[in-house]
Image (cartoon, rainbow, N blue to C red; front, side, top):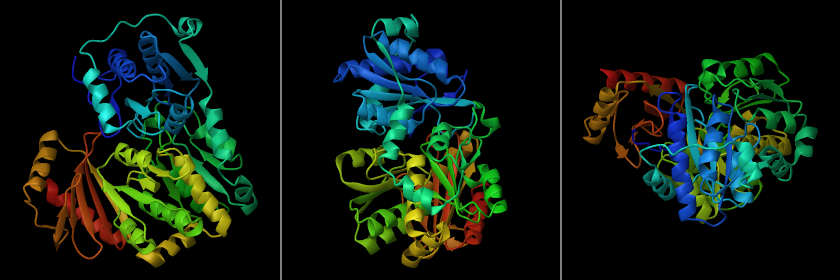
Length: 466
């Protein structure tokens, strides 16, 4: 059997091709061996999201892990990734496992590992688990009823646990009294039940169970959220839009005019609200692809900022050890102080809603407050689907400093923490990086206006593909 490798956020593969019962059993065997080696609780918490085959793959994992005498605390029904992370922290387990491919296309499924601290397992732990993956699949014996009778399986209600935790940490009375009207797009993902229960008056889109996501990748980017944008534009009573990805750990938002608010702006808003309005302290940790405007805001507020490689596990690792106010990445994964060290799209959205409710301001007005400090900007990315040969050729050119200019502007500076970030004109950057979870080359651009960003992306795409 082929070697199984974890990417920036878990192991992901195409269902029935490489993501099979046998390969899931191999990863589950490694998980069990790791728990036995690092045993503290002799237990794992396990769940699956709305993807095709989730229940089958979770059952496979439970049977393999329990065969080692390790107790499995299994969520009943689909759950979000933040629920598993929360459960790993609160239920006394050695590790959490969530069967999910997050935002990947519907043909994929995956396997994420979560730490007892309540966030992604550290890169060191993931490497240890990888090294324990056997070449052949273990035998899969028994069924869940037998495990329960043997005391090796406990059903847990992570959704109720999570909702109780959310209700205890937000001023829902203020949100309700403000009259804010929210539109929410679950993208057929695992956040659908939570918003339905927490905000019963929200206008809901794609909040039904559809394991194929109607053929669209459940990634909360503007190109995938046209219906949400159109709904807000057509209904003047809606004040904001919220979207979460397949496992509800990533966020996308819209302002009252149906304009997309990307993760860079959301990170700035969260730092602004938590520090300037709520008086909270702590450092800010961002992934390499995040806008440099975060550095500018932190400098203005006297906040320490640290830049990591891409992959939330690097941010979470710091959050576990240090006092962190906000940690986040360009792809919409953001964690904030007062919660677990984990991305949580619903939690982040509620922080923004509470900010609006407490100030009586629109998202546009709050973003202007941030612009008053750091200046206006736009940020976007292209995902280039290339042959592996072409992708590697471009990366080789980047490594060898072959490129001297992009979009008509000479490169002034290069950073290569994780990928290649080129500094062009004032407040303009262009970044090139291969995806860690998909056969894709990502090109990112930041500039003062959307028009300039599009120009940079188009001209860079043409130059790279020539």
